[in-house]
Length: 175
Image (cartoon, rainbow, N blue to C red; front, side, top):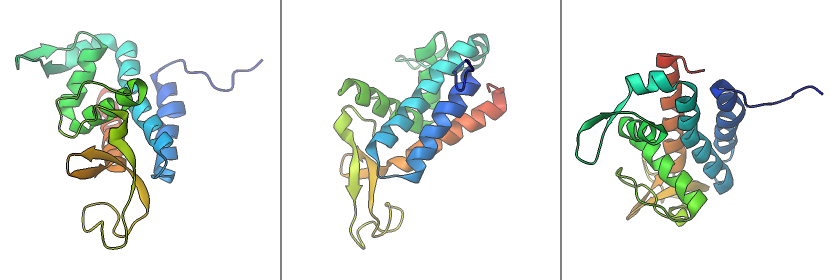
């Protein structure tokens, strides 16, 4: 037999999972399942990077702990904390991924993070409701992340995290 697809390393995970999940959600921004898949794969890319490049990640990344002390990354959770402090949208994606898996989770320290799977949902605006900078003007349904009185466009969040990973990969050569 010949292997058609096998995830051997972080480059395989990026190409076969993250990019495909991101592309699938980009093509259908009203598909909640695709949005959750994109969030889960973008969040778990941190595990793949940490496991594949642990020594370099430990030597390069820091985060501020609960006491506001700068701490070197020592494990996968610490790496995720560093990424969350680097890009708030990573914290939002992290919260959505965890809420999708566990239904409820602790709220992340970034604003507008999910603490329940129900915080991410499909919403539609009618003609003239979206307004400038607030989703599609008169647009159709799309996935949003609940933020108190308003909702954040989940596609924007996912795109920011995807771009973050591409930027970090250019800097560190992870895949």
